[in-house]
Image (cartoon, rainbow over all chains, first blue to last red; front, side, top):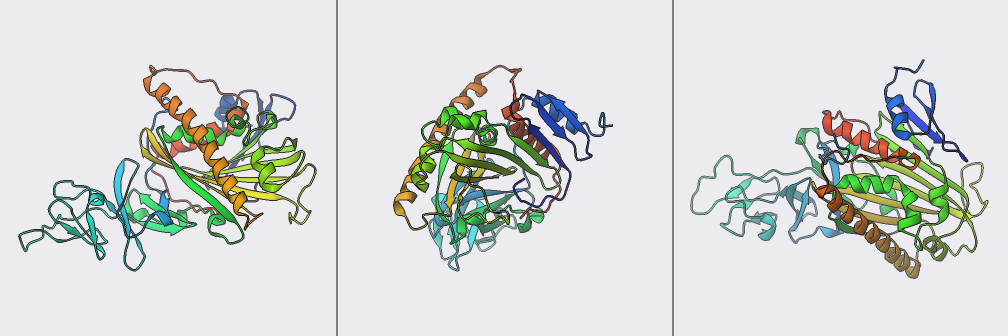
Length: 52
Length: 354
């Protein structure tokens, strides 16, 4: 995102413009929607539970 | 655990001072609850020792330098640059335990970094970089404010810049900051939290209007890069609205400001708030330097006032207060979680990102 070199496991949360929706992407590729950042981090960090 | 419970992250590098603060005068500063004394040897190397004489605890910072040794101001115990006692009064035998801890120190990017933790784990390559601060292609203004608040409050503050709209209106805040969605990334292996806010069409706050000369609205990018626990970088880019970098990445029409904070706990309830603002324009313009120094100092003081209030609130509240977090807190939550993990787990060395 900033041009820095990232090598490891990266979690990404995008706040969809014009909405209250957060889109979370796990380093495994699983994607999750939420309107609560606490719930979103809980889901991401539960990997691989619930990540299909 | 209460997310605001303060524990220190040890076995890490922390900014203890600016290089220019350390000279041939003894200099005291407490880092993570450890009182330290700093000085520069006659060869110019920075020395950091525990600031307590092993004999009766007298602060060495209240003593005197004699060549490269410190002579305790109470009974004359004398220490070399490695902390070994080389003289005790009245007797020839120097007790084997007569020494004070010496701390690994590295001077880099205008900062003095000190390693707090197990000496044998101090690896210079782990120090995160802020190269703009010592780069002749940038002009930097800087300072340090003491904060009577736990360091986690400053982390929270800096990871969520939506507060600029409300706390720093008239300086760096405009309505668009709080209303623009953010993107958050966490790089687990390199231990970096990124928060990006890209404003395509925003009002230009005085901080940037007066320093760049831009009239009218701007495209404003705020890209945060937090290297917990200590170093926070805000890559700020402003340009007239719609002006973007070239496709090859060159950005001759953008104005770049690298805002650097070093967040160094002093005690469990106080923090050294180092701040620096480096710019790649108006390099020799003293008026711009004076303006940015004064403006950023004011902004820092606004944060200090708010965080000092919050510290008193938190210190006096009963257990179990339930905070509320919303979308703007996504990055701050990530930083808190990473710090908590570093506090509770034995940290393994990781490669510093460049």
